[in-house]
Amino acid sequence: MKKFNHKNSLIGIFLNQTQKEILLNNNSLSKFFFDKIQFIYPILKIYSNFKFKDIELTLIDEKNEIVFLKKISELLPNSISNDKDIDEVYFSYFNGVYPLLSIPLTKELDERHQNFLSQYSYSENLPSGIIPKFISREFIQSLPNDENLNFHDYLIKNINHFDVEIFFKEPDLRQYRLDFSLASHESFILTESLIQKKYNLEYEDILNLLKKDPNLFRISPFYLEIELYRGCENTCTFCPRQFQKLENDFSGIEISTIDKLVSSMNTDFPFKYTVCFGGLGEPFLHKNFNKISEIFLKEENLKELIVETSLYPELEFIKEKISNLETFKNKLCFIINLSTITESSYKKIYSKSILSEQLKKIDFLAEIFGKSQIHVQM
Image (cartoon, rainbow, N blue to C red; front, side, top):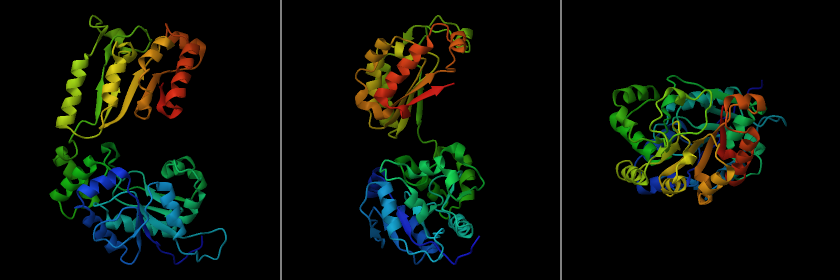
């Protein structure tokens, strides 16, 4: 492999609308971020789609991330490789504000990116907000002209087509689902709380702090599972209902209970959350499925409503239940109990359902809500 005396060319910082709103209301954590950038890259120019107070940068007023990245790639210097097959030019990319940016880990990954002439370098186990991604011009120019594209998802799906450096560092905090990029109010509160606990925080300090004080990140329930309806007319061979007492079957949660729950979340935990109609019952059998779904879907803080269903009621029955929910299709998804698409096996597992009818219902939901919001549980 050829060696070039090449360095990081510039810094790109892209903020989504939520991040912009958070920083407009409270910009106090930005200084931690830019002090660290200045220490690591004292002479690099900064380009961002948000104008930070008292920070010298060039504004690229762009709301779409893919367009922003393509505009950044146009600002990069010419290659010095003199090789038509190698474009070594790259930049560091931050999709948010990183007050907990790790200086040693950023330097380490940057050095690896240079040494291995990578086209894309990132970490799979470090929480967002600890290190940037390092992205080459080659990678950006390979992206399809699709403004709805998620560029990182595109990389994962096509990872064998690129020279990728995947950075792993202990401790592995993925199980905690942490985010330090100020991508949400929860992320802001968590990041600020950690800095208050230890001003010069390093990545290896985070786990011990969280173990000593779990309240730092357990600030709110973010996932609510609700058994909307107690009961199911199916007799699936694997269902644990066969070992339960069923005298409370055929009862559902009252709308008044749902109203109290939503009111409590808004008052006590004003953060984004996900609701799942799960448990062992069939949610579509609840007489007020439509109304209860609407109550949640209208809430500003609801991220997603997940419906776990065996989907065995008649298609017309299901159509009636979702008749008013198309407006909220972006927040609604379905997980459908479908362990096989072999007719003989299906009959053995699901005694009262017909496979061909189930597949029609799945197609019907996919037409309305899109295939990306239809999942199967196997």
